[in-house]
Image 1 (tube, rainbow, N blue to C red):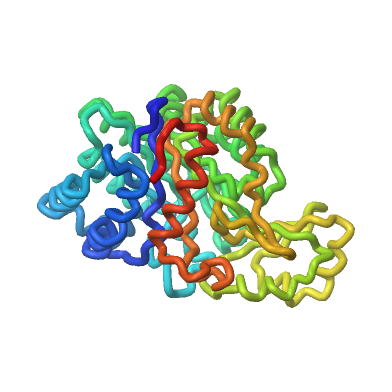
Image 2: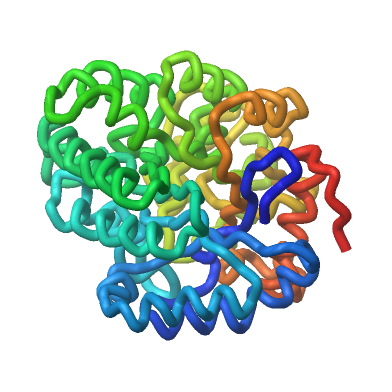
Length: 386
């Protein structure tokens, strides 16, 4: 939905399983009406689409692309952003480190991303602005070690493609690299260094075009995983002139090392990577590594642990576990509003694998409504929520 200050807000449809064009239509026709009716009954509802590679290939058929647009219009919805991070299967199978492939050294990632923007340019309302979030270059621990030159080459080609789209359609579109635990771009400092020292100096596209069309997707769960202050992250990107293409409002799991940690096993879903980080800098690549590590008890000297498990924003926690939503302070929302970021979405894609104690028998639609109802008042939008 478009908010009173002109920004756009939604939830990310990556919460709904499915890789095909038909799966995408099913999600929009089945889940979106209930969510829209609760959040935006009287105005068009923006969608944070997730278009997998399979669906993207199908959408090269102009009739299917028109069918998707007609489907959204029938639901009084519009597109403004796409989650282009997961390339293939993202639910109900082992995803883990495969979610980072292909990375930005691969022509396949470039071609897929170009296609997503071609689709988005068609779906955007006239004069609309669009964003696509993507892999933060690649996974730090992959066997292949691509060079920054390879990453910069493909990102520069991407920027030139997006510049061409804007010239042809009048629609501004931009890509957001999404820093994530254990990725090539993990921290704010690493991300700033890549833009300043690699991408902007590569000479493969003008710095002006790169700054206009390539930026970051700020995921607040991932920022929290680094024990960074999200306010400082927003300010750092803003001061560096790096576009915040999109902000994903999300929270990580948090606990004290001295607590009873046996409940962590319930978050080991076998589907996603759940990196664990301690306040003193010790880290584990996945939750099973932490659980099986006898030395994990030694982290009690740095009491706080954070686990890369996206938990609902509206979840208050229990005696042993909580979320990092406490990092999303009024000062953070103010800093975000003062930045150039106009695209906001909640992005808790894990509802189908969360422990039942957190799901509490709610449907995905009910959870997404609760997520958005928590987020909207915090964004301080004067919007009545039914």
